Image (cartoon, rainbow, N blue to C red; front, side, top):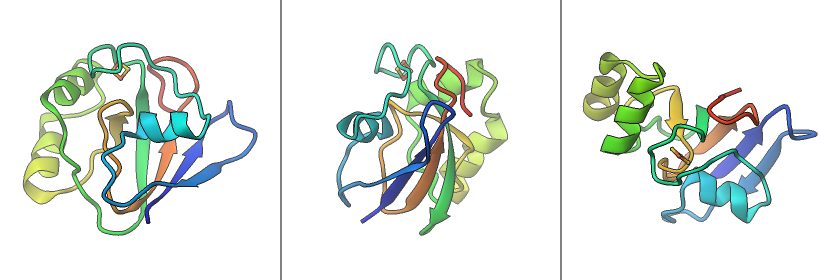
Length: 122
Ligand code: FES
């Protein structure tokens, strides 16, 4: 069972929740199910407002399938490089920044940081 810990200046303290292993929920959906508000707008990888920083706490580091929309949006935000995309896809090394509406929780414990401002990772 993966633990997802949310950290943000808008939370009084870090909040750790359990996501269901094998679930296909996005980080945004897991947050919403636990009444944690990550700023978002389109929910479709196109606006960049749900930018988060992800740190792998335990379990194998995984590139975790970047969608084409996520790659292109992160690139236009200057939050991912071509080299980081290559490492994610070839070496399965997770990039630092993700979009909460696109990132599907995998079987690994992660720390999700967000600022509480649209488009601002912590
Ligand atoms: S909500 Fe728009 S990119 Fe995630």
